[in-house]
Image 1 (tube, rainbow, N blue to C red):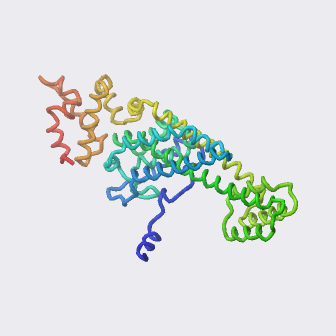
Image 2: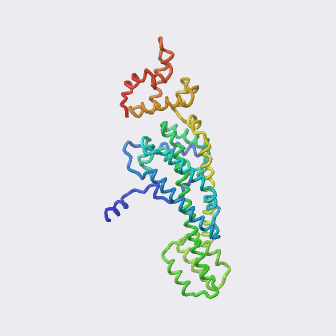
Length: 391
């Protein structure tokens, strides 16, 4: 027992310990590009990442928690209780959320992330670098997905740190994972706020009874002593008891004192709660809309726009005229050669293009194609130059 407690104390905080929505200052296009460069300059990768919570397990946790929230909200609606617009968005579009969870599970086989470069430090230390990049982009767009904005963000990041082919292919799955994570966080807050409002309603019902007993009401006050009152509880109680006399007025005085002990006023609490509900509604709408949009995007075309390896091959060979499966063969070969050597993917690509450009003689036409060295007879020679060892 003591050892487990000590491990919990010593374990560094991670993003999974944070229940706040994934949200930060909203950036415009230019500010977003600037942030991408700053992020690239600050993100260091490591060959010895710390152990982390399984992303598949986290996805399953998120799915279970979302289902729990949906069932609770659905039950409340069935009993005629009001729910917020954000909760309605979740209920009305839960079929889409389930589809996204199923698709993410199918696209995330065990070990999928194992070959991707991992972050050395920060709240996402041990997780793939691309996961941290997409997380930052989602936070600064309030979960509103735009393929062009994402392309600009990734391209600017690559001005400082080029991304691997595998990382670029992992952008879509990372985006889905983070949108699901954010929806879980907001949904948990939505249901917690709904429970707090119900608790406030029970207290208000007691206070407003014609034969309300002051001792019983004061017992409820004592029960709430020492606990932080949620804003949603306070706002609902104000809504129910304002402009009332007797015990209702005394209850509002008690509430005012309690809120002030927490460093707020009733006016600021009401304002903050309305702002939180409005923000939650916008973010949930953005998440649902983005999930739908992510499924509609042609990610092959998006990849072509951001891959530096593709750009090099297109500029200096006939690579761009090939069909997609053929281009994938070339890319896969570049990945394999890089993983089995000390050369990064762009360096491998450059070496191949230099060899192709210098080809001459009887077989020059074939040798001037990068594929001759990536998947053809020239592969063995290239492996020797790279000191390639099969991973």
